[in-house]
Length: 201
Image 1 (spheres, rainbow, N blue to C red):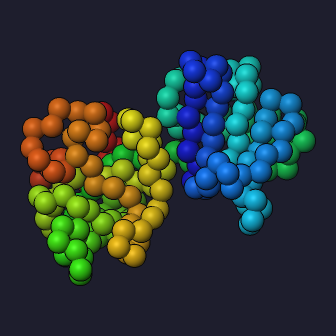
Image 2: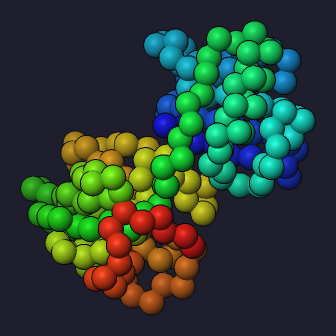
């Protein structure tokens, strides 16, 4: 999984690619030409790349979160190789926002508002998601932001924990998606929505 954001406004033609969650003060930097490789200081794992003058290396970039297609990944990998890095990105075209089906929903012990859900997304995958919305129930069709999704306000969805329980995404409200909020809590879709289809907004 990688998360790509292109900024040709405030940062002027920079493509940022995140591979793992890592705070800025925990990163170490290796720079070659227009590329910066970011590593975790402790584990030495590669956590991301910044590519400057990105439009000179990769065609068709648009402002905001982007999902790089096969040709764009090839162009990025050629740029990596030309700069002397041995790393390689894999193509990842799975949708980040999908229609989910809440298969089960149970209260989280010790919490007065959190629920633990098992929610089916695309490719018959079931994600464990902790949700605090009061209107979530088993059987609903909902919008799921999977790990790797970038919310409209810029927040990245990473796997995490709530109350010590693993959570692998977020069930979204309309407001969180930048859409008109017509009901409190999460956005509930018609029951005949196709589970796993890409949700565009």
